[in-house]
Image (tube, rainbow, N blue to C red; front, side, top):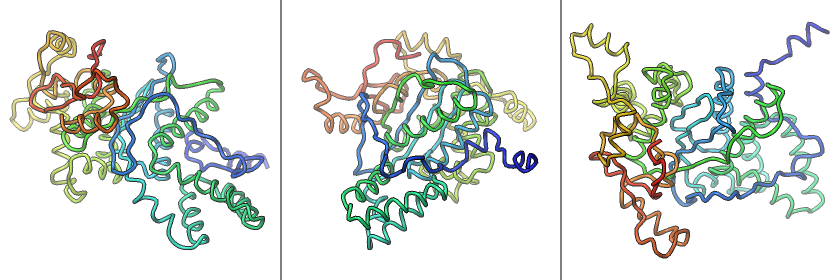
Length: 385
């Protein structure tokens, strides 16, 4: 018996990858409530939207080692498959994480759950719930729904079903549940209690195209800015490294970012995205320098240092995109909206009631050459750090 028990013992990483089990006391009859929170979000259900989200550990402690980062990635991917929210790229650091997300239009995504008879709709929903929940959980849910149907509790039945549908294609639910699930895993692994995260989460609405590519590079360069690696390909817990490691999901996401087909990954996308990460001006890693030396090419000039870049920005100078990406710039995390002037102004007009009557324009320019990037938030204090 002791040997059998030992075989069934799961590692902490295997526990992170487990499906959600059933709940004592019922599932549907005690559906969790979701708070709206205080931070305003630029959420639009009638279109595809892209977001940069980030969250930091309370107190800024460096709590995440290799196992924690891998567990976070496993939970992130499971929530991605369930929610319909696509992770385009990411960086899991020692005390925070960055995600670049695509949230699809809700009405299109939910059509498959709305057509057909009641039994057909329920069957399709249960097939989808298998992505996140265990067989025991689903059997208990199925039994509770059967009781509701038998007793004519139609209102409660519909409310229960809708509770699951509301979590699909939702930025709020994706982020809230990902952070909560990881917190439970982390606290159990380390025998701790209490909150793990410093705040709810920050989000920036990002325009497709140039702004999306710039934001993706900013996220994948996080470990380089932190001094952990010279080349993001060497950092295991970012989207770029995962794509180079062979992940089809990560490669497909980078193709979306670059606006190219998946079939063009080998021929175009891989090199195009790497050029975006290492534009002229960014300091090359030692491996890149050695490779270029073997090929008889002169390696890239040493890149502008972060301290110098920040000093130039404070003096009102503009930098290249490459130089800007080497800095930690709050426009990428606190700018609310990032994109072209027209994109930012359109969002400003749609949410005009959120701003004071004295504000006439939404777009605020970023100090970067040639890209025409604008932010909605005017960050006057510590905007560059």
